[in-house]
Image 1 (tube, helix red, strand yellow):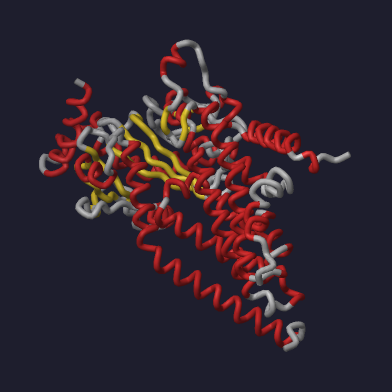
Image 2 (image 1 turned 180 degrees about the vertical axis):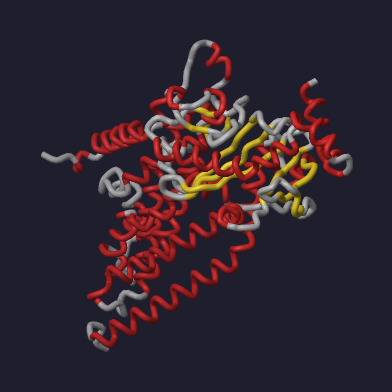
Length: 260
Length: 207
């Protein structure tokens, strides 16, 4: 057979591509459940880091440490709940959807040790960046953070995920008020020193993107924070003497025991 | 059929004709993934599988591949193997797959794979090609593991993540060499390996 004829070449390439596509599609379908379980485990691991909870078995540790995983809207009202039994969490694609959604359902992970973890998600330099921020009982002071990224430059932008000193810089910082809630920039360029952290040298765009992302997501949660933070507890209890108050009390109490 | 020498085909690329230290192919990935032994080990294993299987498949198809599109056909086959390896790693070795990130995908561009198919598999019988592919993969993996061994030992004081340099030594004033973590040191180590090999194998030296 003449393997150099045009017809042969075209038919050969079509068959080859179809066969390869079939093999890959089959592999992808077959492996998908395992891969998704891994991604979910990884997400929960990141949430646990932000909640300063450690444990061998990630899923069991999460189930043990979590108090409630709720969904709130932009007004800060509870609109739903995530199933703890099956370790339901919002992955990056779920978070991405919330940014544009009119009726937002923003996840809040409340842990028994008094730390409340909220996620963030945004565009970095080369791809998405995301993170989990653990707050103390006042829902204003940051206790721990964990960031992740899809493909930031190793050694520069990737430091948001793998440079421990960058994550440590967030500890004790607070969310500001007004337009600028949080900044990632050098101190001289920040409105207030305590509402931000230093940027990473050589990774200007990733740093700015992270600042923007945090600012946006803290904005989403602003109403939730002010409604449920410890500082407003008195005010909140005066206003509504029923469920809101018990919710407040539940969240504030564990934090106090930790501080003692 | 019998005119191929197993020893020559399989062992030659491991020592005498090593793809990294003699042919100087696949340098980029060997700089990137050798910070830790575990990563180097998995990367080496992945490359062995990819070179072996794609050489085998290309060799099986060698008489049917239209000459004008042979590079594209090779590329498609290699890419399929790489994606399969990547998917399997994502499913069964997620943490390693995260560390290796883009480098698994970049096996496609590893000159060793395409080079061996073009130079060997298209002109030889399947079994010989499989051996040649595996041999080259092992040669690549071996250099990776040697480099990673020194980088992890001297850079982090660990091997496969386990602390091997005792705390007492650190108390005595020893510090990990931070330069070992960075890619330039991998290049220097590679240079040393090539140097050693060339002083043993005199026939490699240029006049």
